[in-house]
Amino acid sequence: MALVAGMLLAGCGRAGEQQAAQPEPAQEEPAETVSEPETEKTEPVYAPESFDPETIRSVTGHASTVNMEDCDTLTQIVDRLEDGKGYTNTQIGEAGVLLVGNDLFEWEPGSTASLDAEIFAYENGAPVYLGYVAGGGTAYPLQVRDDVLYSGGNHYMVKYTVKDGKLAVLEEVYVVYDKDGNDTCYYRTGDTAFADHDAATAAAKFDALFAELDGTEVLTFDQIDRSAAGVLPAYEYPGPEVFYTEVYRYLVDEFGPNYPKGDVTIPCPVIVAEDDSNKQDILLYGDFWVFNYDLKGDTLECASGGAYPGVMHISSDPEKGYAVTGMDIVADGSDYTESAKKIFGKHYDEFSKINADDKSREETRAQIIANYVAANNLTITAYKDYGWDPVELPEENIDSFYSDLN
Image (cartoon, rainbow, N blue to C red; front, side, top):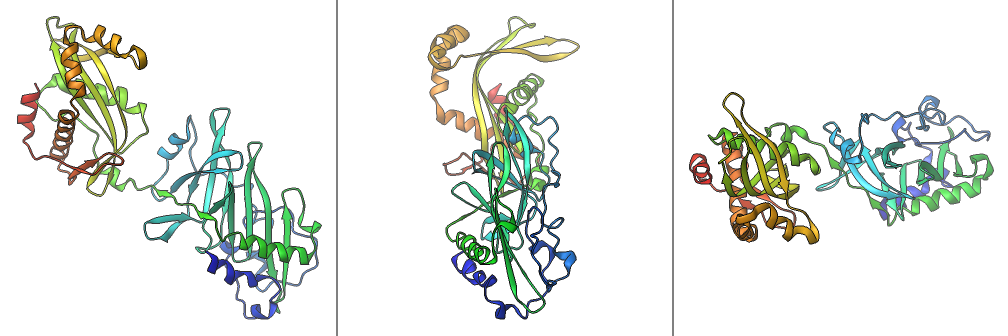
């Protein structure tokens, strides 16, 4: 970034180097402003319509392209993003913000940056749209430094903050050239206008703001690609037992949404005991897990999940079949042991043994994923938890596994 900034500091005070300047595309022009400075200027080299401070640079009227209706969290906003958009989280001024990028590009191998962003934050516990910023070329991705957002192009730079719940300009500079290549710089702060600063001050500020890019952090965006997620079918129990079809469906529907959404939710029930003496209230004791996964290549990477030890209540009706009617879940914290003993009763010792057997649980988890993969003819070969090595999936026959389970 130091080299890039150094090359661009000639923008002010070196008119001779600009005589051969060609018209700049509209996207290279400044991102936001108030009124054009009341300073007499000759006509710019590029067409006036490509540089209109009141339209090209003004982004105050930019409406969000994201459907925020009924979104209670920033995560739900991300869940609605279309393919091709990107998102990242950072701190700007007084707020932790979500940035949604539309104009993405590869900044470095494996790193995606953006020229623009719609910015969202929380206000009174609900997500709100703060505004839009736009840069002017791939040499100027959105960047942050000391909780300040930088957006610019060859001929302008804007520093943003969030103050009092609003996106605000801290400093802004830009330069224009007349038909002879002579430059004029303009500068303002959030509390001053362009006309409040003379050309010499503006030129110095132009160089200073570009110099600040040396040491900034380029924001990296996660790009939405639901092409992979689109080929992942929702999880359905692939075994022969209708009873377990309802158990697995209940775990996915009831507990999967408690966590950040993934490409697919796959449950992992570890059964302790079953009591079917009362067909109207069959008791299924177990350590019930759910995991949300994202598909990365041929590996399912765990995005979120959790455990719900307890007893599931299931009714059986000759006409309607099986249905989960509810679940008693072991309490958290200091009440855990007492609650577990009460819920599991005579099965408590067996539950404790199964609950402590991580190896057996992971074997069950791997097999359930493998069965899902086989039932849907997918090319997934492994699953992976954050910070751990991938675990290869077994190739055991589905029917034999579920026969053993039942």
